[in-house]
Image (cartoon, rainbow, N blue to C red):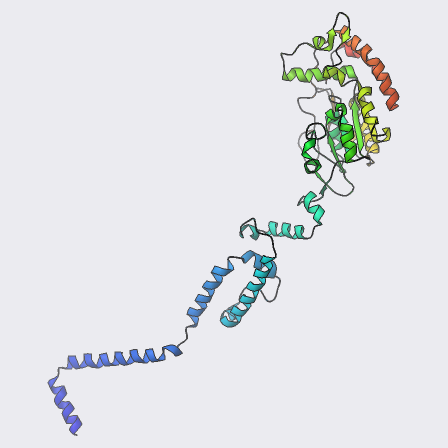
Length: 416
């Protein structure tokens, strides 16, 4: 009774509003101390999961592609499920193990040359797998697509303006022939660059395919036979020859198209026209002395490794000449008469259009130029000049190209 009486006296003297504020402050203070005392026992699973996921983001992005590549098929390394996210301890353990394996793998690899993002593409992953399973020699000479780059097994070595481009384009129709489109000029102009440079120019070939190139200037280059022989003694050589008089006029026509101000054919062909002295040092005429150049090649290669194509017959009977060439190369006769048609405008055969092309495959505008009119007396004298060399060439090759029968036709304008 005494307590309540004293309390009643106190409360009667203190305003109710002040009393309420005092009680509320005591309650808040009590709650604060209660929370502080229990802080250590409280758990914040959502916050910890967030922090852990944040650590995953910063570390995983460093080697994300490598890990996907190495462990995507592994049961112990896959994307986290919701149940796994609720057990951070086990996740952290798996993550640490995977990270350790990744670091160890990286240490054994060469220094990367591309960003991690670049390795994320499927194409590069496939390329890496192919690289790692390929023989060391093929790593140098193979493309990522197919085949192997090889030194040529056959070369069209000549002659200029004889029909080498037409022959090459016809051979490229054959599925077992892979040839360089441009003339490499390796054995006459680029020999110092080495065989590796030369091989790298070649297209990739599969087993059973032949690698080829054509550079007509090889035939008249003195050191070309020895250089080619040192590369491959068993190589097959193809020489396309043409009536040397017609060939010389064609050669001059090509030069004239580039240099219209050069002297006339008659002036260049003679040292002294009055005396009838032919200038055999002029390259357009010297190339046509086939026997002279063939002698250099026969010092290194037997005739069995050479095949001579008639430039004239390549025009009138392309399928017949192609049959002989395919036999010489050991190829099945696939390129036949069905692949050719005669172009009246150009004056020579063209390849019929492939199924996947809308236009025929015909030689460019540099072929089929109209020859300038040459004095018939000059043509007659040139035939007389070449005749003994032609006879010698027939004997050396065992073939009669019958160029003497064309003497009359050479007095008229013809086409390249």
